Image (tube, rainbow, N blue to C red; front, side, top):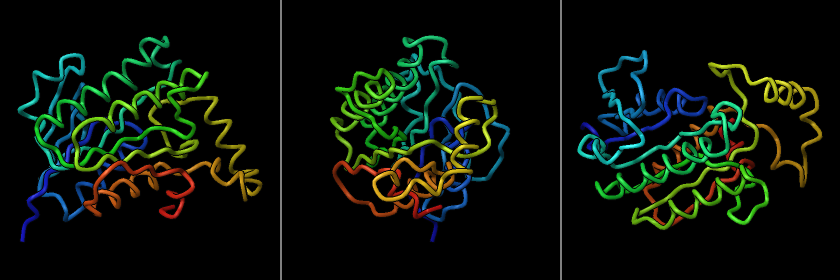
Length: 220
């Protein structure tokens, strides 16, 4: 019997999002997968529906954004965004707007990629923005909100980030030291995060659930 559920994913061109999209398309849980982005992806699949949007005016597209489970993999870096203000626009404003619009169209679950160390009270700008985003999203009327907090993500990105590449090399050479209390800082493959997201959705639970990086390592 065909599954009645619909998934929506934002940020499917990114590191976690690209893996997540493939898993959603393969999953018997969903009969349709809606990919939301600023441009179409070079991906074709019978289940896939692509919706090109302006994230600054997401409300205009609300009738195309009806889904049961919403997977939010939006994110950038301050360097790529060009300023702290533009970084916050993507990692806070766009994420929260997506959550607001899809909560109004009666999505049951919102699953969002945040970061290890997210804290609305942090002195670090990056961690503070992620924490503020978490607070805003969990206040919305979803049946369940799942917050995923990965450490450094491993995987092949479309663009080269030299700082992250250097960190990846370090992790591969000296990852063995990340044991005990340091285990939570161990780098994690992006595909493991994507798998954790799908597995969490399958539980069809309720409330706010946080998934720390160390917990997601089981999907590596």
